[in-house]
Image (tube, rainbow, N blue to C red):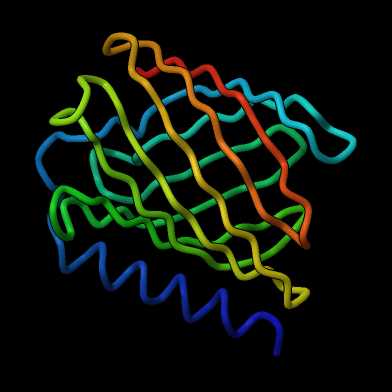
Amino acid sequence: MKHILPIITLTTLAAAASAQSAAPAGLIYNRVTVNQNTSGSTNRNISVANLIGGSNVLVELVQGGDINVGYVFKNVTNGIDATVGITSGTADGIGVNLRRSLSEVFAGLELAVGYTRLERSSNKWSYEVSYNINKQFSVAFGAEDFQNANAKSVSVRFNY
């Protein structure tokens, strides 16, 4: 029974991938992230995210064995990209992340908001403000609200 939701999600992602062609260039998704946070026993981690084969399928490998797979719906409305995906590893779940460039306000500025429903009936909200120093490097400040513990994080990213 607990595997039905991931199977339905993967089926939906596969159908969406075949129905929608890759959108034009926008936000950068191919990146390596080094993150320092204030929660848990692992306060620092490294992750690698990549759009697979020029498609909108996003795969992220996180230090410690977590794997996130999602589908990026680019420019859903008002320049917002929506990623729907599943998480597998230390915490299995399904979630959505909304991301938008705010370059019209300040060049290089981005905002992201995410929600994940974890297997153990927990909810996780995440918020992030990012600044792209140039096309290759960015820094971000984020917060997560998970089981009433508000954790802060700082990230440095290399975009490729």
